[in-house]
Amino acid sequence: MKISVYQMEILPGKPEENMQKVKNWIQRETKLTKPDVIVLPEMWTTSYTLEEIHLCADLDGKTIVPFLQELSATHNINIIGGSFANNVGGEIYNTAVVTNRRGEVVYQYDKVHLVPMLNEPTYLAGGKKAPEVFELDGVKMGLIICFDLRFAEIIRPLALEGAEVLFIVAEWPIARIHHWKNIQVTRAIENQMFVVSCNNVGTYKNDTFGGTSMVVNPWGETLIEGSSTEEESVSITIDVKETLDVRKRVPIFTSRVPALYKQGL
Image (tube, rainbow, N blue to C red; front, side, top):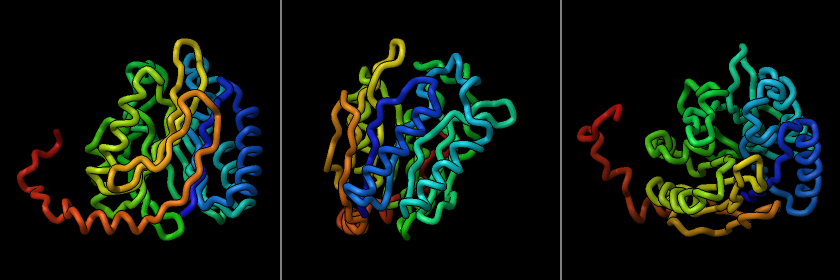
């Protein structure tokens, strides 16, 4: 499976211009590398313009979702569509969407964990459902958004349900980039799955975002890593069969004793 990650510099508060950037990039990337899966970053339509987010949020996905569906169908690609500010019934969610090669929406997820350090809870509503497993080209996958990465308890169920690849879409600040890198490796090792992340670069007000989009294999080895400052494509081919091999070599899932684990903590 060939994956191309768009480590994007987002234009704050300009959805139409960012949509054009994404469209242009996908047109180039599909010709150059012919990926199976495209990955976009968190809040790629607006960035963290939270004080004005109600002015530029999409209305119930009516613009962004069809846009991604059309790109998927036109270029015969699966798209992990990052996330976008989504106004649903007057509340604004940080919503991720996944489309397949036929232009069908196969999964949609609202970010559960909102970031206190970026004041997200003041402006956004948290998602009401935990992440779930979905499939693209017969491969089981999971998807989380940025701050979700810090919460191991929402990721382990995805592995238990057979996910082989975990996608993380983010706007992760450079000030905490060592957390970003180390936690991804940890999640890959403890869940024995590929971890594929897409972060953005650039600065908005007092926040500088740290790029360093990554692909980590189920053994915890970083296969590729993007720049911390430059907009770029990060492209790699992975063999998802490695998850089965690692799970056989170190059988943690058959060694679990869930009856002794405290629930709900």
